[in-house]
Length: 297
Image (tube, rainbow, N blue to C red; front, side):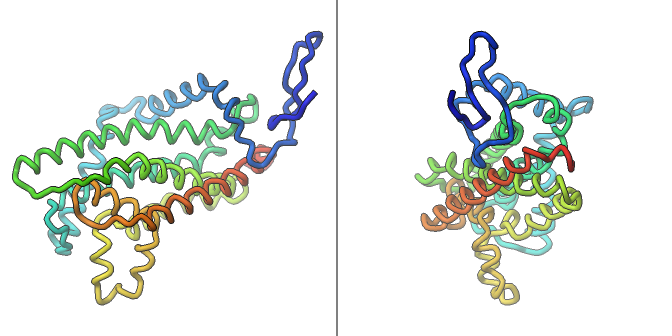
């Protein structure tokens, strides 16, 4: 007999069972071999997340395209044409589309993982499986939406190149998967923290809906960080944007593909470390809440 992260494991041919599931689990409780054994369930969850999102809608997956395009157009009209925010040599629409594309993936990871316990309460109460599969499936399914929006970004990118825009991608573009992974880890970490809190305090479900909208305005989605640094009225508050990991990652993405903005290794390391810390703290609280959340959700 030996201990495992899901309880007591015993090989008994007479009884025919291998696992006894109980609440005595490690707080970290990420059993990667177990996650691999449940890979079929993970794929089913990913398929469910993709299909259920736009089921019984007229336009279906076209919403993947409509939302970032319309958002980028509105940002261009308001922030670049009316507020006259400069985007350097980069066309304003392409500048905004780059920020919106990365921001959408972060908000997807954050909002879906923050509702994990609420949306899966009935399933969690009846069937055992690694609970981390639920938020992980959301992050993976979001990659499809991210991929479609990146394709649209690439199409407009080459269109503006054909029009003669001085776009200048650089060698740091190979770090894009690192940016995307950091964005996902950060969103999952914060989302799991909020998901644990919503089991007792349902106010957080209301808070998350508009908190993400407010967060967008301090995440350099529709303006370069340099605009905040050079602003006479906002100069004292520039640190809020400069040390916002989402703003740093979006700015780094623009630097990689557009040649506009800045990229610093120490800031990237800061984002990675902060994301990992929040992820593991969120995972600990998520696992602890998963033991008895059904009594409070």
